[in-house]
Structure formats: structure tokens, C-alpha cells
Length: 483
Ligand SMILES: Cc1cc2nc3c(=O)[nH]c(=O)nc-3n(C[C@H](O)[C@H](O)[C@H](O)COP(=O)(O)OP(=O)(O)OC[C@H]3O[C@@H](n4cnc5c(N)ncnc54)[C@H](O)[C@@H]3O)c2cc1C
Image (cartoon, rainbow, N blue to C red; front, side):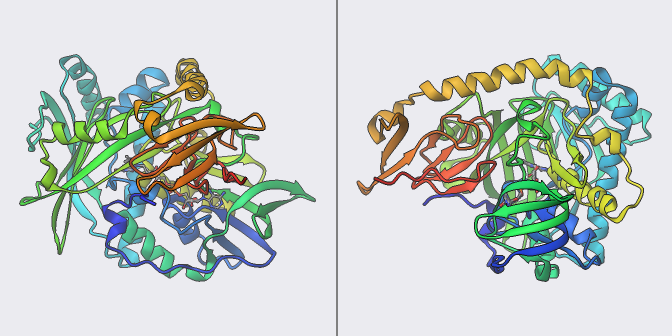
């Protein structure tokens, strides 16, 4: 299997924690050990009756493939919120992101986590003259909030025509952060324990796993894409975006991170450790519903950043959830059932913030930003994006049924068994791998990812190995085909 591991995971030897083998009753169960779930567990560490389960290894979800920038300068989010919702929302979101950076710094300092936290200037830049006005609006908003903004040129070789930058932002090694929390909290973590269903019985939640069940008074769902539709209906409130990352070694660290105003996005950051300085380049972001060839996109990233083939030390892709109003969902889905999701590619700040906010809920403390991140909110921005995103999802649902990539013709055989579509993939050794090609989550047709040899869902980001094992939710079921 060719599932890629990013720069972050490659160099680490990580302990595997035991799975949960017996039924348990607990006050608070956290489902999912990415940055959001683990940080929640960290803030609840002094509470006795709480534990976390992860379907695989903690940190091995979307978090392991992030680019690890901790910044409040996020494209032109404040101008978007100001123009489409209101000033108060833009101000609150800015405060929340600044708070998240402080929380991250505090945890890292207090626990003495060696995760290469480095203070850098964050840039937003544009390559298009029509975006300068928007970027200047972003500058004006930030200045009005007493943030020091510079209009200096981007100090790296990219075709930027205008850029702004701010101070007091950071980059870090996300998996060293996650790993440290994992060892600190390992008595409260069970790996390889997947939850497939939640139901309510006698005022408590029964969380049904593949082998066990857990009864909990409070449940925190931090599994990236929740595996249930009701009560929260995420598939109609968000879409998915995929990006491609290529890494090379360089001689100098300019101590910056940078991102473009809008999609298809580009971003760059540097990571420095004892083995050298790495330039982490991201581009070609697109909706997963608008399927593109991964190999072509990696080529484009190399071209944009002038990276020669022999310079490449690593490459990988990653998918995150983009909500219709670009704000995360952190809060109650129903009484005592909490969700943290929809981080809009800013899950380092928002995942850490989610951990803080949800732990406060469990502890019965005052919780800031409740309205801002409410799962039940509705605003003009959501309505404005609802139909384009719904149409995009419909196209991906219908299109995924018809799609026949050029590559498919020589490597895949599509047929049906008892009316259900199946595909036979013949690998480079001539071995056949047969799977059902309908996603068990909501019925979208899966697309074969020939670079990683996985079946990927273009609608909600579930992934399966070439032999049909589910390796990423929201699907909780496999797509194995047996004669
Ligand atoms: C290309 C790219 C670059 C990015 N760069 C940045 C950046 O620079 N800065 C930034 O702030 N953000 C960035 N992000 C966003 C950030 O990486 C994500 O938002 C964040 O990692 C999501 O964390 P999570 O904890 O929600 O999910 P995950 O890390 O996916 O964790 C969820 C966990 O839940 C487990 N799980 C799933 N289903 C179940 C189940 N049924 N039962 C039990 N466990 C389950 C999984 O195994 C997984 O370990 C980027 C995103 C992308 C796509």
C-alpha cells in the first residue's frame, strides 16, 4: 500500500496504544484523536472520568498532513466576514484566532514540548491585480483592530504583486505536539477503536464500536468529518477542498509563512530542525467535487515553486472541510453531544481552540465565542454559498457515477455484482483487487487515486485501501468484495 506520510510523520517512531476491548461507562468520551480531540483531552486531563478513542493511531488523520502554520492572518477571512456577515463577527473571529495562538504557546511552554515552535511573520500575497483592493481592505480591518501590518514585498521568489504581513504568528511541527500530548495522556487513550454509531438511551449516549460499546453522559465528536448525518447535517453546510504539497531542502530560513488571497491557493512555510531547512510549498487547491489528476497537480506545484524533480524530498496531499461561511463548527449538536469540525484549513488554531472551548463546556465554565461557532447559526454568507456548494456536491455525486479517467481504461475493470457496481484494480504486479465502488456513507461513487492506490470519496472524503478497508471516515464501513 502506498498511503503517503508527510514530512511530519516520517521521521518518528510512534508508540501504538492498546485498543478498548471491554464495555465501559464513562462521564465524557472524546471520539477522534487529531489536534482537536487530543487538545480537548489535554484540557480535561484532571477530570477522572474521561477518555479518548481513535479509529486508528492518534494524529494520523488530517493533522499528520497539515502544513502547521499557527496564524491569525488567514487569506482575507476578515474582509469576507465583514462584507458577508458583519463587523462584530470579523472582530470576534480575529480575537478567537489570537486566543488560539496564545493557548498553543501556553501548552507548548507549560509542557515543555519540543515541537520546533518558531515565531515568524505571516504574509498574504496576491499575483492578481484585481485582488489588491481586497487585500488592502484586509489591511485596513487589521489596522483598525490595532494590529501592526506591514506592506513589504514577499521575501521569497514568488510572483507576488502586492503583499501584507503581520508579526507574532508561528509555525510548528504538528506531530511532535500531538505525540507529546499522546504520551502525557496515554492512560486515557485507546487506539484502533472505531465508533460506528451513537444512539441515546435513558438520557445517556451509547457509542457503538466495531467490537465494544461505551456509555457516556457527554460525547465530543472530533473525528474530522462526523460519521452521522443527523442531528447536525454537515454535508449540506460544507464542502471539501484538496491541496498538494511538495517539500525541498533549502539553505536559508527566511522565517516567514505566506499564503495567497484566494483559490486556487498557494502557500509556503519553512521548517528547520537538526537535519536541515525544509521549504514546504502548497498549491493547486480545488474542491474535491471538481476532481483533478493528482499527478498533474504535483507537477504544477513543482512548476510554480521552481522545484526540480531531484530536489523533492517529500510530497503529499490533504483534504479539509470548508464551511459555507468559513467559520468552524464548535459546540452542541444536541444536549451533551458536542462537535468540533469544519476548520477551513485552519485547524491548528481552530482545533486547539475547540479543545479549550469544549473542555470549558464539559467543566461547566463560561464559554466564549459560543454564538460565533454555534452549529445552529445561520447567516447570509451561508445562504449565499449554500446553492453553489449544493450544486457542486450534486455534480460530484452524479459525475462520480460517470467518471472514467483515461488512466482507468488500462488499469481498472468496472462491472456489477447483484446490481451493485464493483471495480477490479490490477496492480503493477498483476494482482487483482476487487471492491464495491459505492461509498457506504452516502452513496457517492468512489474515485481511484492511482498515486496512493486508494479509493477516495469526492463528496465527503472517506478513503479506502485498494482492498477495501476504510482508512478515513465519515464512512464507518469497508467496501470489501468477496466472491
Ligand atoms: C493541505 C492542508 C494544509 C493545512 N495547513 C494548515 C495550517 O498550516 N494551519 C492550520 O491551522 N491548519 C491547516 N490545515 C487544517 C488542519 O490540518 C485540519 O483542520 C486539522 O488537522 C483537522 O484536525 P482534526 O482533529 O479535526 O482531524 P484529524 O486530524 O483528522 O483527526 C480526527 C481523528 O478522528 C479519528 N476518527 C475518525 N473517525 C472515527 C471514528 N468513527 N471513531 C473513532 N475515531 C475516528 C481519525 O482516525 C483521526 O485520528 C491544513 C489542511 C490542509 C488540507
